[in-house]
Length: 251
Image (cartoon, rainbow, N blue to C red; front, side, top):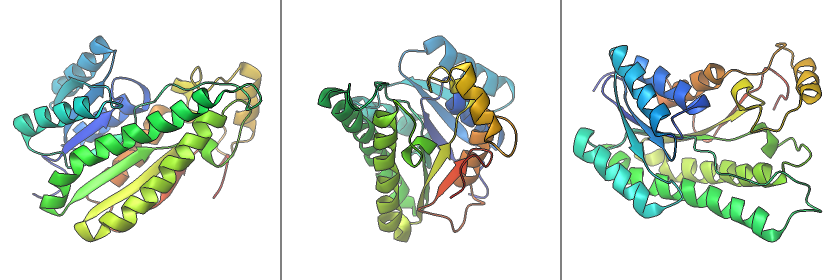
């Protein structure tokens, strides 16, 4: 198989925002895209329709990525239709509490850590056999700049995503000999996720002022970085984190 044409990409949380933008870009590059979703049935189907109208191939599959059995069933559906998953983009956003540590319970912090890692563990376990068997695979996890640069109230998200980033590095080391790369795309604030990131207008203006490129990211900015990691052009990058933040933080 040459190029990305015909590769099968599973995008978790693919019905909106970064996930939807990624699904469209990967499809435009010739991949067959699985749009995973949990509750947004109409939105996921619309993404599939958009991709098919543009001449691509896509399917929408409902599954809670925190449930290993649901994940296995999803991957089996894909395997039956298209063969194994070549590319995993794990983008699904697990809900989390926004509050200070002083006000937070262990249940709030611990449940986010557990759910974040359980989802990453489940989806990765499900797709690895096919990637290992063919000696080629691409895994991309969506992180956050908050894992390195704290912001008030975001300890649950930042801590859980920091764990995910280190998880990715360990996988990169282990899976490299099997021809599988593992990388993280770490966005700063994204215009389409402002509500999720709890940015009021004053905070947003401060973020823009601190960004050398003079704006917040758009979902497509992040999706393009994901698409590079997911494709054939990424021949020698693994265990890395791409900060897509317009220069707001440089590391």
